Length: 184
Image 1 (tube, helix red, strand yellow):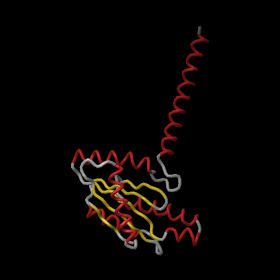
Image 2 (cartoon, rainbow, N blue to C red):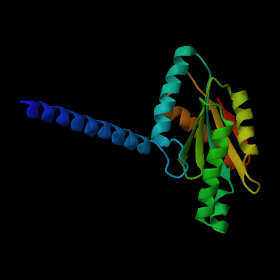
Image 3 (spheres, rainbow, N blue to C red):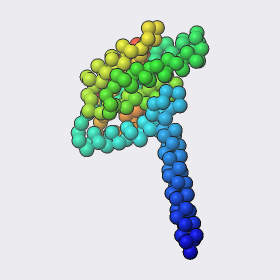
Image 4 (cartoon, rainbow, N blue to C red):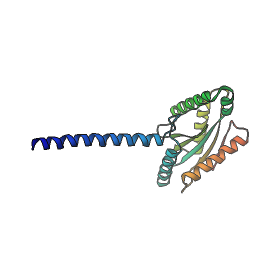
């Protein structure tokens, strides 16, 4: 009888350890699925989830919210002249610098290639331009930054607000780059 009880206790300990390990592994997989492997920033999947939550919060509270699409001007030249390793290093460095320049509750995500999205809760378009100028000042010489900014509209969904910010970015790039365009 004592052996059976000891066996049950040991089995419970082993099962608890296996469950804890499976939980940790599951969390690690979730983290990997939401993280850009190069920069360590949130990826598009994480961006969509967080942006949806921020839009819902802004709708509830009436607070402003801006979304900024950022693109590195001259990035293709870095890859072509210095190689993809140098381009990757520039992306990693920009992610580090820009993250440090934002508020703790702002979101910087890698959208793809040399495009990033910044979500600025409790921020109007005038202040978003100031934030973009601060990010631009952190870009190394020889490169620049184009940005498209849009403010939240009541009832916006992530796809719609991202599309407007992307349209603004395309306008900035079409006008020669190295500039910021704001759309309502």
